Length: 169
Image (cartoon, rainbow, N blue to C red):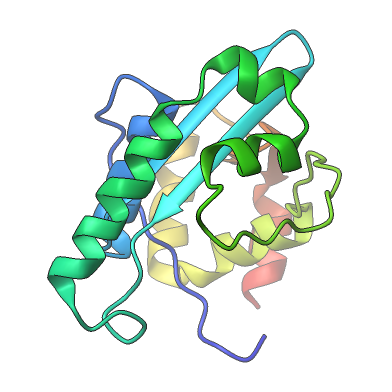
């Protein structure tokens, strides 16, 4: 709410979700990051390791050494340990020489904030000329409205041309 909103889009070029996340952080945050993800039935565990920015660790060599050491320690955990050991026990086993802080667990829920109103606002943001072009294009194809698909929750919003015209006034 206090900062500027931005969107970072990077291509999906890696074979795993962890690889895609690492690539995203390398491109957007420009900091080394490493992810370990594993799942079994209804349980999923993930660890994200990020190098500290220069403001927090000005010694780049030390930062890379710390990152590599922590990465090696994390890599020593098996999927079974990650899925079955309580988080505190796993952290103690992996990082017994480090000072660790464990946060209270939070439930993870799927949620999307898309709506018909936001989708119509996205169409409006294109501007009159582009929207007119889209409408003409869709009419030539025999479609009776504009469609906006949410690529997060897969909700589809369809707007007839009159609704779009009203929104542009």
